[in-house]
Amino acid sequence: MATVSVRAGNVSDLAALIAVNTEIQALHFANRPDQFKPVDGVAIERWFVELFQNPAASVWVAQLDERVVGYAVVIRCSRPEGPYCPARAWWDLDQVGVLAEQRRTGVCRALVERVLQAASAENVAALELSSWNFNETAQDAFRSLGFVPKVTRFELSVKSSTT
Image 1: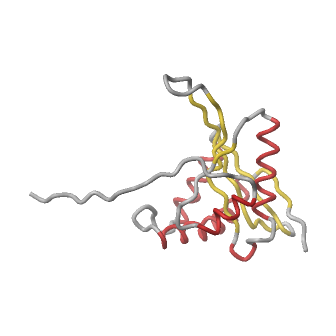
Image 2: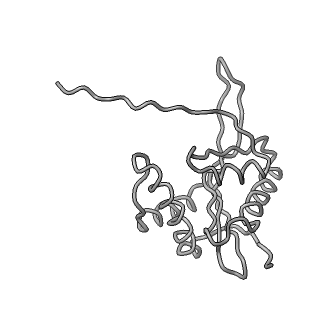
Image 3: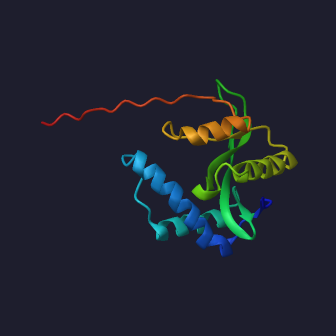
């Protein structure tokens, strides 16, 4: 089995990032078309370009035999002290994507371990992520990596009245 390597992503990775993201976006759109748009490669490319220009964001790519098979996006977050909560800083693992053919091969683990190394080096106290309720496979992967649920968010559709 080939070894997964993880490195900082850059604009030369755009085509590969779009390919991985396309699979992830299609999955989300298929399950929640009320919340997600169909795949739009141009918009996805623009989003990644903006990430590379954002000093609060980092993108890492996972490679097998020099082929990008996954990525992770981190957004650095902070919140000032308020009447109910202390000040805090954390990293939001905004996206983790792995090509379907490479899932369950250690790619996600390698990405998360690299993010954890970087967070530790910057003295970040917490790494957080969100997962859509339908994506039980991802949730199982995150639990196996040590993540635990923190908040459960509910939704209730409101029917509009017509007058």
